[in-house]
Length: 328
Image 1 (spheres, rainbow, N blue to C red):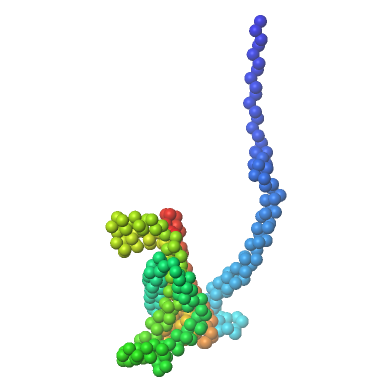
Image 2: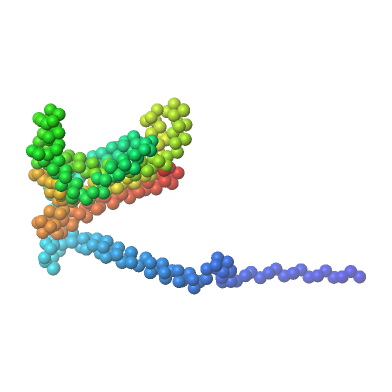
């Protein structure tokens, strides 16, 4: 007689979901209690930064939004509600539009100048090894100097009688060109702008030079062997590799053009005849010299509203360039 076949083994029951989760936690080496402790620790570590941001950023912004809808002079504890009157006055303010036009000039020239000069200097010194630290320190030093000190020194340089600029022009036979650079409405804005470009060029130079040091030189050599000239190698080989860094520098320089204040305030105070007035100095004069806190706050919010979209757009371009595998 043949033995009866053994019954088939029953399939194993599925493991409960909770047991699987507990097994995964145990395999990862982190228990639920540890995760809770880590979460509490994370909250404690982040809390100081959140409090500081709330006190010094969120609350001032909300307070500024409130001020633009009232007529606050800095003393009245219950300022009257005026609704959109500050925005209506701003749209009809010719001096505001003149200051905004000066900001446009500053943004265009104050961004293009440092980018062209700083990138050009970085390309010239790209292959220089001996003394490169000295060059970086010399060119970067104006950027780290206090803007007040820079404005005062350049005010001496632009002085009409004893200024170094006019003396230098007279020494080379160009005495007819000399003038009071900061006292002439036709040249005051460009004189201050020249100082700002001199200050920002060193920053662009140092950042771009650091990016160039990470460029794949074998690609540049291959393009040279293929017959590409210098401009073609720069456009199609070098610039794509440093584009994320270049966009970052562009964003910082461009935003500085929206928020320019200190160098103009120190050198001219917005004069002569409002020739160098920008939105920052105009907002300051209204808020703190004319005690029109609400109107000055409205001007400041307009500057912020103009700068933020540009910064976001440039940040997206930088991320896109980085995501495409470009960059040093």
